[in-house]
Amino acid sequence: MAPASRIADLKQAGNEQFRNGQYGQAAALYGRALQLLEAAGDKNAEEKSVLYSNRAACYLKDGNCSLCIKDCSDALDLVPFGIKPLLRRAAAYEALERYHLAYVDYKTALQVDCTVQAAHDGVNRMTKALLEKDGLQWRQKLPPIPSVPVSAQRRWELPPPGSQEASSKSKANDAVTKQAAATERANALKLEGNEFVKKRNYKKAVEKYTESLKLHKLECATYTNRALCYLNLQQYKEAIQDCSEALKIDPKNVKAFYRRAQAYKELKDYKSSKADINSLLKIEADNSAAKKLLQELNKLLK
Image 1 (cartoon, one colour):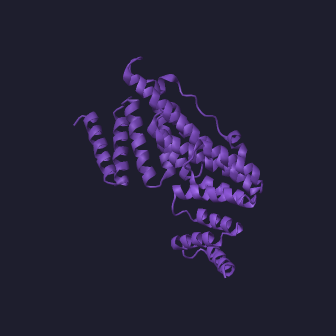
Image 2 (tube, rainbow, N blue to C red):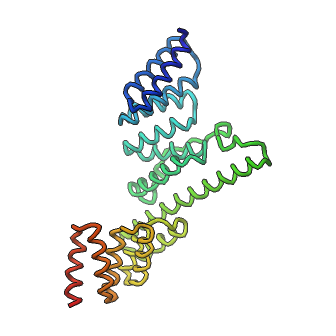
Image 3 (cartoon, helix red, strand yellow):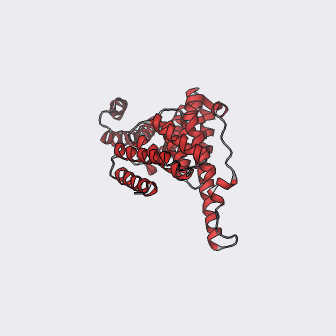
């Protein structure tokens, strides 16, 4: 059998093993295909890159992040700015808590194709992790983000200008990009708010949470965080409103029930407060803070 045919068979067999969840066997098959390519003196960089990337996926599934990173880097050396090796390497860096490098890879992938949701999600996760790790100056600690040449940017591979397909695709790309940017900014503002809460600067935290909610209204944690600030600022009606909004999004949110119960108690609406605590205890029966508040409410209702 010719080497090219044998390599194709090994690759296909590797794909089948991967689909069946046999990642170790798949990695071995991709490795044998790479050995044959080397032995045959094949200069096909794209074929080698795909095999390295495929084997990297196996390593990632098996939790061998270091080997995954090595294979993805080899794949990217052969064919720069490949989406799959960028995303797989980013995932491996993320698993190893090397968040700066993961952020760079996710951002690079978005330069190549701005419609890749996994890259948008990764950027959002890394933004949160880095803000918590390094504070508000986290961007200053990032390695340089490569500039992707236009020739490698898939978003430029559009149908003929002026066609309906081109117009639709362009609008879809713009919408995805704007939405992702808004979500990323909303997450960053929420985390800035969290930093102000730690410093007990509740007024400033409320400002940040409010800005965040303007960009992303369906973020339950931002409502409950702002409610906590309102409680500390003795703005109990606002706290109740925020907790109610959170419960519309997540009807079983324990923090929303507890903080609304606290606000009702301060307004001397003990029945409503007790109703919220009872709802909370149906969800989380062993919540000690809720049990303590319930005892206080029972005394007040007597």
